[in-house]
Length: 419
Image 1: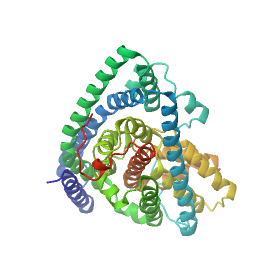
Image 2: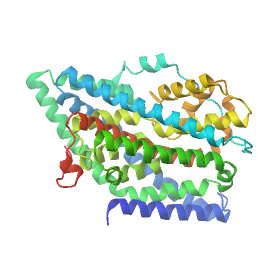
Image 3: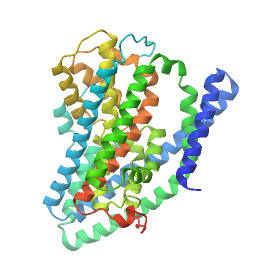
Image 4: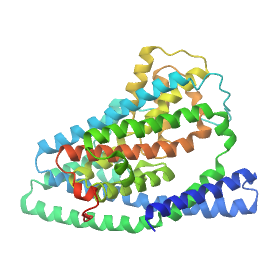
């Protein structure tokens, strides 16, 4: 059976099992809930995420070194980086703008009766200048240990850039990293076979904990975000895929099912990144020197789905408190949400940290985030899947513009070696 269908079955069964525990009214005091949900499903899901996480740092470093070493001149790296970052910021700006228009039209905060029982303490925000300075590593080993993706990317680009200019010693180092990268891709292929079981455990655990009463309380907000995500995925990405990648959007979406499903269950672009990179190279036909740069960068700065949530949440919280936002405030939301995506950790619920920054910029009470925390876990799963689609689209669009998109691989007429 195709791995995608196995993952779908694991997801479906997990939703059913988790919903059974939720609807039956069981909690941790019941022995069956305690054994299965709190122990078996929790452990299984955590192990699956850990298996993917262990690949992230070495894969990002090795892939970017290989990609930068193959782009032997600075102009190529600058052009590739400019296109990639430009497309990521453009789609994020479009996402939050569309979300604001949609939320203003629906007005999900009018008459809302949301529970504020969720505890929320606003995290400390970071200024843009601190984010920019923080991109440059002072200790690359520390950056790798902490999983600071921007610093890892900058250090790997510098190493790859120098490797390309070091003659015979550089050639030996490049051969080592290419072999190491090949081994890592083979390991990903092995680990992803555990995805159906991991997905089942994660979904069972999530749906056993999510209270459907919270979704009903916030149904209008919930459905507005879902509608925004659907429009961005089908219309915005669909149109851009057709115009820039010049392939069928449906064929494109079919080929990235696996990373989107993994993203949905893990709620983390960083954790899903090894699967995304493997899929982009082996199913979409993006050459390694493009994929190795654009995918890790996208997992770090591309937050289209999160930007949609922020746009809707801002309008929802403003409506709930009866605060009217001016046109300049909406422009501030667009700018802040777009810039805040840079440097935000690609981990579950990172969008909440970004939302704190957005609300503070337009004078809305940050405590209002407590209103939406009850359903944020499920929305986080959905918006992460949209983020992953954006990563794959930008990588493919840049590869197409650089003449590095292998259509024989995309159409399934040729298999690509993982190296």
